[in-house]
Image (cartoon, rainbow, N blue to C red; front, side, top):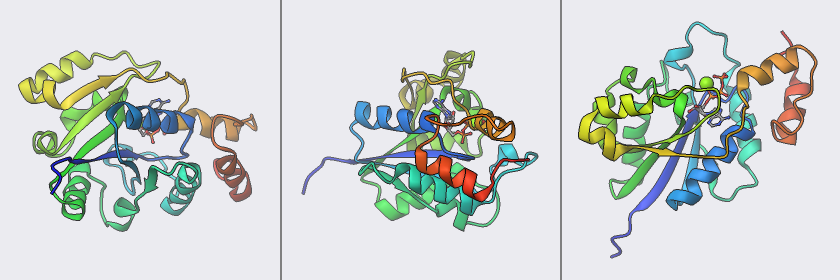
Length: 205
Ligand code: ATP
Ligand code: MG
C-alpha cells in the first residue's frame, strides 16, 4: 500500500460573498503545496462575527458552489452549516479526520489577518497538532505574524507557514458596501456570483 499521504486544503470563511481574493489564494496554496483538493467550508455561525449581520447560510453556500464549480480541485462542504451552534474549526477538523482517515494531511488556508487571531481560537493547541496553517499574505494587514508563530514555540514554527500570494485588495465588506451604494462589483466576484447577488437583492441594505 502506498505511503503517500493525501493532502487536503480547507478554506474556511463566511463567504458573504465569496470573491476572487478567496479563489486566487486557494488556488495558489493548492499549487504550492500540491494539494489533492480544497474544501471550501462556509461557516454557519462564526464565533467572531456574532454581533454583525451575516447573510443566511443558504445564499452563501450557493454562491460558494457557483464560484468554485469550474475548478475540478475545488469542493464545497456543508459540514458547518449542517452543524447546530457556533462554527468552531476544531469540530470541523475532527469531523474531517473521521471522514478522510488519519492518513490525510490537512492544510487550513487563511489570510494572514486571520492568523493573527489564532491564539483566541478554541483548542488551538490541539488544532495545531491536527493541521497546518498556511497564512496567505494580504494587503492592508500589518502582519506581526512572527510574534504569533513565536508564541506557539516549536509547534508554531512547524505548523504555521507563510505563503506570499498574489495580493488582491478585495474584501467581502467592501463588496457589500459597493452593492449598497450601487457601484460595480464586476470582476471582483465571478460573474455567476454577481448575477446571484443582483437577482436575490442581497446587500442592498
Ligand atoms: P469580511 O470583510 O466580511 O470579513 P473577507 O473578505 O475577510 O470578508 P472572509 O469570509 O472573512 O472574507 O475570509 C475567509 C478567509 O479568506 C480568511 O482567512 C481571510 O483572511 C481570507 N481572505 C479574504 N480575503 C482575502 C484576500 N483578498 N486575499 C487573501 N486572503 C483573503
Ligand atoms: Mg474577514
